[in-house]
Length: 249
Length: 133
Image (cartoon, rainbow over all chains, first blue to last red; front, side):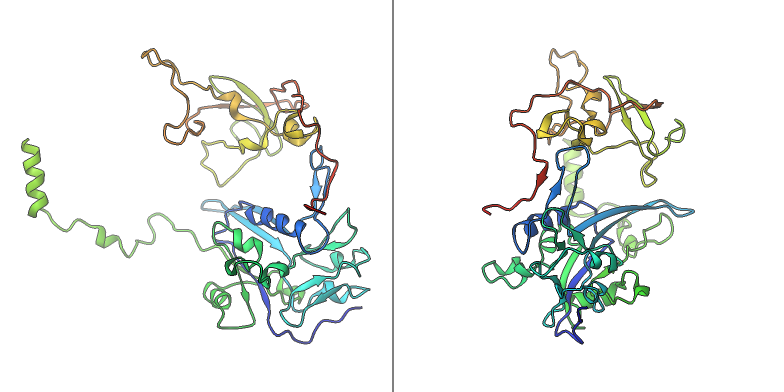
């Protein structure tokens, strides 16, 4: 069985904002596009033009409709990918050492040449974040775009995961979550970022920011509302004169 | 939808002044109760886009275009105006009144037009896409 590192120098991961995600699937498409062409085997599709299309994805978005007993229903769009857990059960279950967690940045990766496609890691992952590729016969998972973030052939602004780079809503953030001063850590602290299923003891690195409560009509009056009240009862000044002059014409 | 006796997965006739389609429906609570909507682009005529004829785009997907005339009703100015947004050219879906009523599930979404002949054949059964490898 494969060992996890005792500690990692960094904990790179994603912070995903469930308040601003609109469920457009741009991250799904850019992830599939980048990762089919780059690190490891391509992400295959079975029967893509037929009656039962399925395929391998490293990132999927599921949408849920939350309907409270009273008040309006709300949609929550939930992007799901590998959470790069600190205590990753997919690594310790691997019989060949193909699954590993990097000591330098905490990214969980699969060495495809050592993967025998047994599927144990997919069973062990409580998040369903690993997918066996039916063509290559190896386990595929989010690499945090390891071939982008250190890639000096790319312009600096592109050195982040493809999903983060493409998100049109700015709902995805990438950074070092072990550094309490990093932008992502501050965002998590400010917005009450959550672990997914913490009871599983996996200590996920990725965090999710919960949807903000919705405004309700008639309850909270905007602090700026008093400033929008009309201040002058009678019209005065140049524009008043101009208005009157134009009306006479 | 509940008024029409419909629940998730049922099929419904959707009728406008211009046409009628028969399609699968689902309730969305987070929507104005007087509105229906769809992703128009997921419907494909059979044979289009190099899809197999039993692809879900053709069997369950559908187009609203059958409900919407391309032209506005005559205005008496001798011209027929396009039924589209004058600024963007976007098809005018947003002001179309429709009637919905429960339908017996057909084999495929209606209308079911004859398949198009694909000029490029059918897509591959397995796709493992890597350019240059």
